[in-house]
Length: 97
Image (cartoon, rainbow, N blue to C red; front, side):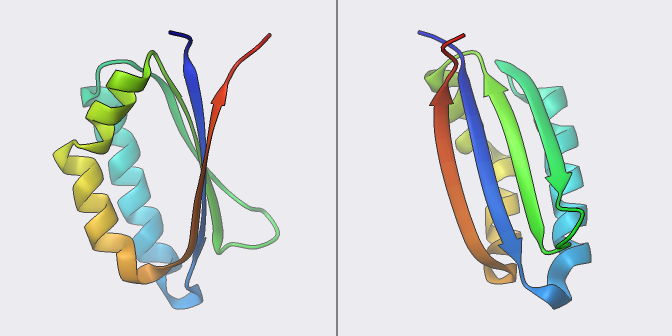
């Protein structure tokens, strides 16, 4: 199976930017250090709209991505931030070239 790229976009409630940002930073650190198959996991914040965050991830396989999705740190992030997020979308991509 080819590597998978995930582009996860979040729009955060204006009064929740800092708590979500801190939760993201913790998630990034735990994912990079603990999750097998994580090739890259990068957090971005929009320069013009501070409520918009994008996580760009590259995984060695879908199975290892699913393992990450079931990890305690990912589940903790989702529960902790669920009422702080207005919009959450995910695109799963396969690199062609």
